[in-house]
Each structure stands twice: as structure tokens, then as C-alpha cells.
Amino acid sequence: MDTTVIRETVRDRWSPDSGAALEGLSGLVEIPALSPSFDADWQRTGALHDAIAHVRTYLDARGLPGATTEVVELPGRTPVLLLDVPATEGARTDETVVVYGHLDKQPEAGEWSPGLGPWKPVVKDGRLYGRGANDDGYAAYAAATALEALHAAGGAHARAVVLLETCEESGSRDLDAYLEHLRPRLGEVGLVVCLDTSGADHERLWLATSLRGMISFDLTVRVLTSGVHSGHASGFVPSSFRILRELLDRIEDPRSGELHLPELVTDVPADRLAEVRAAGDALAPTLPLVEGMRYSRDGTADVADLVLANTWATTLSVTGAEGLPPLADAGNVLRPYTSVKLSFRLPPTVEANTALEALTTTLTADPPYGAQIDIARADAATGWNAGPRVPWLESTLDTVSDEVFGLPWRALGLGGTIPFLGMFGRAYPDAQFVVTGPRGPGNNAHVPDEWLHLQQTERVTEAVARIIDAHARA
Image (tube, rainbow, N blue to C red; front, side):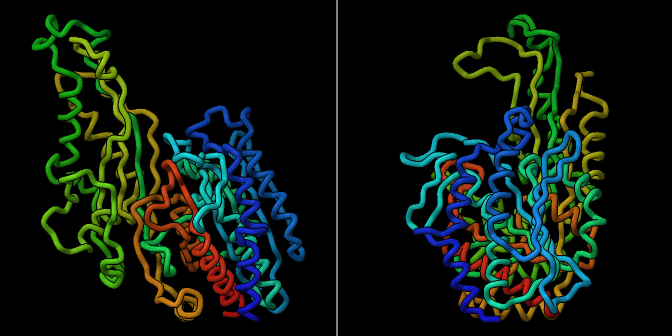
């Protein structure tokens, strides 16, 4: 295999001048392919199908030998796009490589900077701006480019299946059904490449080795059938907000943020702790704190403690509320109810459904003052913790890091959730997982001014090609 040809092919596809991958991704940015949680009428809107069709056209044009594309759409579920490429001559045939990405997007999320917009691709200062550029539209083009580069350079790959879903930003609630449906077709999966994660910088290869799980639901406390003048009702009837606070205190210490329920906590494995120590200060958070604000592990000088709080501790966030009028409209009324959306991030090895059951029981049992307590729209996804790496992958990572990035690779845990990894980890426990991506600090996924670092995207694409080649020869 000619590694120079791999690099040249990758650079050509991602070139800001006329790169086919960059041009294709720019077209994808223009499609407002909102995930179903943000577009309940997605079937009529058609944007998810437009995104699938746009990417499929690009993949078909690659001319990969024997490759086929297919849109799989189970009744009532969001579509999945598959690219299936037969193994090259002489490559191993006992295992399949699955490369994962997603095409659905988050909404605009506020006002973008002048000259930028969520559906307006802009290349500027080595970055591609636009919603879905880095989360995770680039993955389809990086996967195809890696395979193209291998064929151009005389490289090898086992049978490769690129799986692109359209429900990831909604918790991948359709993916389990597709995994069950496609499992006989996928065969024995030996290598999983997930291109939907980030690292601590844009300089080296970062491998995610764990991701937290998540639980979310709406919690409603109702005390009245309608609002009543606070002068008439307060003192007789407790505020729904006070009852809500009491319920939250059942599960979380309001001072430390520690969770009280044993079903929500676990110990940090020794190998994950060692990875955090090895990465050192590179993992230190750089978040836009207001003046005077301190991080949650106040008083510690150890970056590892902060990192582990983000990657191996359960955290609770209130991400939305109803029943509270705007401040300018808030009169002297005892409100009938308060609703909040609760979002829990779970340690990677905590079973999400068990944790959800414990939370539901704790919050609804013996309601204060007999208030009505309701839990609705519950979602749960178990996290993922990587197994040990085999020697061929370990040595390939070392070589690729040296020759492509010029820096040693590092591993990290991530505080977010990718349901795909938990599902595939349980379905294929013996597979090797390479979980990586070009995202890094400040890339603005989910918020205004999202951007993709183009040079790091080139390096990650080249690394993926060489890892897939090594698997074919292992």
C-alpha cells in the first residue's frame, strides 16, 4: 500500500478549492434535516429523506468496485442509508467492518454570527461552518473517502458497511429495530469505526473509550386544577415549585450534586483512570464560565477529578420548564403546576432501564401533601465502555499517530451519549472499536456557529483508511 497516495487522495477530496467530499458535505449542510425530536412531522417535511438522497447520490458516484447503496426504512421509523462494499482481493473475509455516522441534525439553536447560518455552508479559516458539518454529516464523506483512498493506493479492506442513521439526535430510538433487522446481513462484525466523537484538541488522534448513558423525562407536580390569587391560596396550598424541590432533593444533594440512589453510581475501572492520568492537562475543560464562577470540583488542583466528574459520574440537569410564565407576565398567582425536563448522564456501565425504574419509584412514592406527580416522555440509553485492544490495533494506532499526526494518540472518556455504541457493544462484544472524530474544543456542536476543522478531518480520514487496511491484513 502506498501511504503517499492515501494522503494525496484524502487531501484532494477535502480540498477547499474543489474537493468532492467538501462540496458534497456543503450541500448536506443546506438541508435542514432536523431529527424527529425537533420535527415531529418529519415524514411530511421530507428533509431527512432529502439528506439520505443527497448522500446516496454522492456515494453512488464514488465508483467503488462492487459497491451498492440501499435505503432501509422500516414502517413508521426514520430511514437508514447503507453503503456495502465487498472485500478487496486477498483481504480477510471472516469479518465485516461497520463504519457509523448519522445525518440528522439539531435545530438552529439561536442567532448565528454575521455571515453565517445553520443552512449556509461557509468555508473560512480552514473551517466549514454550518449545522451538521461536524455533527455528524462529515462522517459519510470521510468513510467514503477512506475507502476510495485504499483502492487508489493498493490498500485492502474486509467487507465494509457504512451505516448512516437519521435518528441519533433523538436518542437513536429506531436503531435497535434496525440492528435486529440488519444483523443477519452484517455477519460477524470484527471492527466498528464510529466517527461521531471529539477529542481534547485538533492536533492528535483521540480515541473515545467510554461514553455515558442517559435518561430524560418530564416531571410534573400539580397542586391545583387552575391558578388562584396567591393572597387567597398561599399558606393553604404549598407551591408546586417547593414540592418539586423536595422531590429533586430525594435523588440529588443540592450542594454537592452527588446522586443518592445506588442504582446511579459505579466505580471507575482502573484502565479508564490510567487513560485520564496519561492525557493529563490536555483534558482540562475550557468552558465559557461567567466571571467569578468556579468548576464543580472546587478546590481541587487535579484535572482528573474534573474529567471523571464529567465522564464517570451521574449528573442531573434541568433542561426545560413549563408552568412558569415569563417574568414580565408573572402576577401574584399560585400556579397550578410546575413541569421540568430532567436530563441525567449516567456512568458508562450503569444499566439505564434499572436506573430509570429507581428514579421513577423514588420520585412518585408518597408524594408530598398528596400532590399529583407525573412522569412522561421517558427515554433511557445505556452507555458504553470499550473492551481491551488487540495487538494489531494497538501497533497500528502507534504507527498512524506517528506518521499522520506526529504526536502520540490518547484515549479519553466522553460525557455525552451515542446509543449506537452501547447497542453494538452488546451485540458484538468481541469486536474492536475505533471511536474517533475531528471535533475538538469550541466546535459548537448543537449551538450557533458549528464548524468542522478541515485539516483535522483530513488526518482522521487518513487514519481511518490505514486502520481499516490493518484490520484486513490482521
